[in-house]
Image (cartoon, rainbow, N blue to C red; front, side):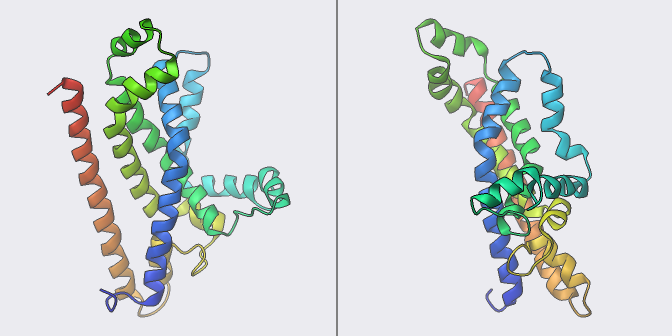
Length: 231
């Protein structure tokens, strides 16, 4: 397979895997927390919070990337603070991971929230009546039951991060070896004569990753249903 892909294609594939991995890993803790809050709590402004969480799914990805550039660029309010401590994310692979993580976040939250809502609250209440704290109840009762849902959400988030294009190219540009992920490499190859074959190879890899993620997510979703049903 080393002869099937050129150096630039391997570079784009490796960078995509790196970006998707860190994007998913960074999104998991806040994703689980947000899903739990939305599934188990009622509070003023809940629908607004839910709308903000799902905003990246509604907004054009270019708009999300532009907002990231405004906020996290070197002149932005967050980016300027990060720059003072030596952290720059704009036009860096870490910025690509940030953009991918934000675009994947709604899918991650939705998958985990559905798995939490499938857990009978009476199981949590029973543990609470025995004196367990809310955190302990979550760790010992809720978390084991929703683990397949978390894994399914992480798989979908990873696939989404692998395929992110609009927000990434707007926020971190398309720099070979630094920010050029698989979708951006496909776009770049299509802009040059004779690049169709390289683009096709990367498209096939992207399709394989996406299909694999969907199949794995479906398998995990079925495991959730069987576990909740007690079979």
